[in-house]
Length: 116
Image (cartoon, rainbow, N blue to C red; front, side, top):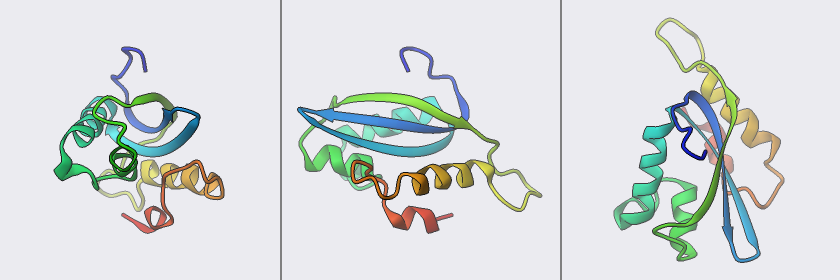
């Protein structure tokens, strides 16, 4: 993101590079900067190694605590608010995961589509 991390209501993309291997991860958050700090903590604290598929990949491949990751914003969508039927942010994230489901370079798992 190169210093531009003050995004809200976003679906984001992380590309992890380790040697010749490239893995990708899709996530969503109301506040990207806070979520980014959470990911960084999960790369340093072993107790958080299974908090996301991204953290598990970093730990399983001994890439931490400062892995080479490129972050990007895929989409903006409003998060759930009281009175709405659905969370557009969650649905947008699931759409991006589903669109890349057959790509083995993505770390997201099928079970993520049924959450929330």
